[in-house]
Amino acid sequence: MKLSTLSRTPFHHSAEAINQVSRVGEVTKPNFKEAYESPQCKDTQIEHGKDPLSLWIEHLGLSDGKAARFMGVTKEAYRALKNDKRGAFLDTTPEMVINFCRRIKVHPAHLGSLDQNYMQSLPPYVTAANMLIAKNPLGEFGEGDTNLATYALRVEQARFNVSFQGKEIYAEVAQVLEALKPEDLAGVFNFVSREGKLTSESLETASVLGEYLLEREQDRLASYQLERDRLGARLSEKYLDMCRRLGAQDAYLFVYRGDDKRGGKGKVKPIDILLRNLIKAYVYNQINQNEIAETPKKSDVRYWVSRFYDGLVREDYNKMLSHLGMHKEISKWKVRLSSEIKETTEAIYPYLKARTEFSRKIGGLTAYYEAAQTTVDSVENWLSEIQARTREGQILQRLFANHMIMMMADSQKNGMQPQNVWTPDPR
Image (cartoon, rainbow, N blue to C red):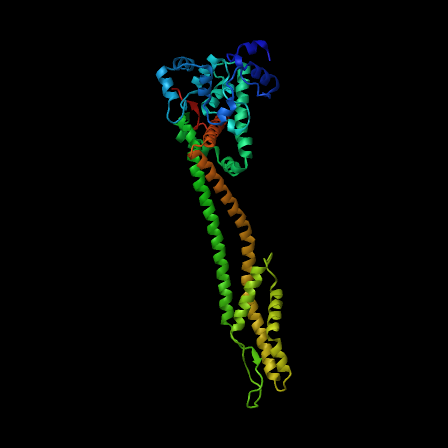
């Protein structure tokens, strides 16, 4: 980097980082080449929600009047910003930040940390100030200043794209956010932020979008549950139809009951309807105990039914064979048995086919349902942190607002969204 370029910077206390990023493209440890005489435990205090402007003003011991002059505003305006009940300096503009940084000779990138940990995300007005320096519309900043501002923006992007998305409890939220269309995100941001102008309300973008995402993901979860119920109802219909068809069959199978007490010839009577109930119970238990990967062939089902019938009536059949004069009954019995096997197979097969289809679909649907439930839980956790305004929730608000304004600036640069342009609030 040329000495003449470095000498142009008004941020002399950040000269080491400006020099390094201009030479190697990044600012490295130790301590990410912090600004000269920066506040003690600055990063820890920012991680616990401390506003960086307040931190530096207290560190430098500036009075309200002097701090107001540094920011280029009246004392009354400064006190209004400082004492804002929603949070100190939320409505600070990028111009105010740059004015302040010029006076303390510290680059906006050094108001906080250059650590990529998402918990080091800074208020959006700092990101906006870096964006303004990086763009350098009036050519008032040197190459080193713009290089450090650009690097600070890369760090902020990494906080969202790497650190935040890499945290397990927010992984699902990150995927959902990534899948949203830029124009949808921009619409929410513009609605919250006075037609795209950065204000304190910009921090509410995360909360508004979180509520929208939660409602959408809950609807998706409900749709998966509805589909699961629909598949279950369809299978139940097939099962009930099978039971109806089995119950409608006539009971013409003959069973030998032995000689009566009067010494007469042995008699036969139809098998009780209990046989159908046994068949139904057997089919139900078999299918539910063993998941069917694919529908068996109808011939295999027929063989299965034949074996079952054979087991039920083998003893009575043998008794018939042991008695003379039963040939006609046996012949009738065999014909009817064959018909029973066929009718039972025809009743069972559609259910087996439906069960296979159900097993195939319910597996994937259950996986979708469980994934949707995980997403809902993740969004709820993310939203609860933001709405409760916990320390982490405040950082998440900053992180998401920064992501939004950088994304919109990129879209504007690429000519993708001329109707959704972020511009600094001129106040």
